Length: 361
Ligand code: ATP
Image (cartoon, rainbow, N blue to C red; front, side, top):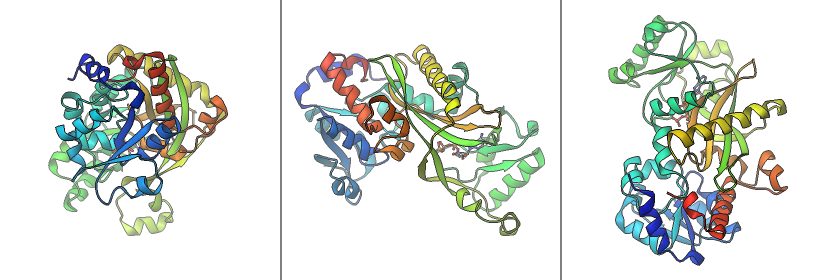
């Protein structure tokens, strides 16, 4: 694991008046880069031919670093270019996926915004569950074996497969029947079925809650909320039930977009309590804990309890639903604040207060 001291040593050699905010051109790069520009930073977008279009057309990047393929971002040559630009990298989901978590932890010697140690805690289901549970958040009940199924469950499979092959079952028999069917169609393997993650299906409304923890202010801010727009499930539910039965289509949960949403106001105390609890527990389990953006993906059941089925320990894609600010981020200063700009503002404040060691790793 790259130590904080190694990173601070690199940062010490930087020209502090010429800091560049850098990220990979994908995921949430538009508002990360736009937000950085609005806060007066210069910006660099790491990209490849054909993928640079939005960053050029929206003019959010001052410079481009081209790679042949996104996974080249881990290469020493690219790291050197970033260090020469006095870059602080903002890691997002695609950055981590292409760089590789092992490389982020052990090889990527460029200062990054946030706590790189916590990223493993969102990517491994066991660690994620431990953090959420020990923080005292409600999570869906987990089933160790298909034989234990006693209610409606959602069955998930490991790896970034975008919810392909996920299915719903209400009994052990239904589990095996559907698993067998998906195997016949070549969607699942025996290994997938043996490693299936089975959890209670929470019937409720989706709220993906985007928080920002400021180590400088020691405060958790509520920046926005979205709900997911997923294919094919969101198309499937437009088909009348009797036609669905005849069509024999398997649902998938591939994220294709995000829709901004606000929550019933009386639920906000619960929302803040959840963010505060997670930040407190993360400090204890993965010091220095959560830094900057994180997201709790939840479902609100009919008892008005928010049940968390997934966590992002970095900027989440749903923040794209409020590039020009959300109903909540507006409330802080009466201005349209995106998550990208909030990150840049924290970096700017840390530079002014000489507290950059609190926000990078
Ligand atoms: P990924 O991490 O693979 O990108 P994701 O973060 O969106 O996916 P998953 O846990 O894979 O989250 O769930 C995909 C979708 O399945 C969710 O957006 C939600 O619609 C639904 N879902 C997940 N867990 C539950 C649950 N316990 N009850 C009901 N629906 C769920």
